[in-house]
Length: 184
Image 1: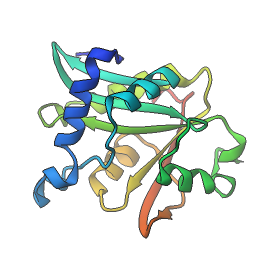
Image 2: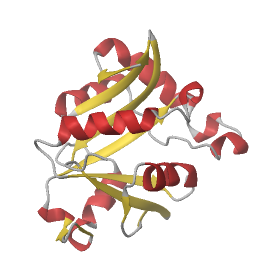
Image 3: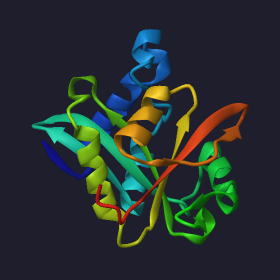
């Protein structure tokens, strides 16, 4: 398994994996294993990749997973990102408000069904922390409250810290964060 920064040839595979794991493509039982709400196109992926990065996990020529890293300054922002950032002055991590730390947005992340449960998320997580730690102190992610599998994977599996949930468009999101300097 190779984990590396994405190249343009990876973008169609990322879009396909993302679309295959959206809630409307999954049964209720499949949704219990996690889902992705993003709808990034190749142009957006390229902008994210140039701004901070999109990491991919490749199993030969097959895309096993991807993970995006987005600067909080990147425009335009999704409404959920805007709502999350608005909470930063009142969200504390490592003794300081988030708005007083160098924070990037972690996600979306998606692992293909065939590669789940094999430690791939942990390997990708280590790679993005290494990639971001020079310029960022904290990674922050939002997780749809209706996606408990993703929440457990990040809080229990990756040891991210859950802060206060927030709302956007009548939907509740969990805010989870991690220190980039932490090697676990």
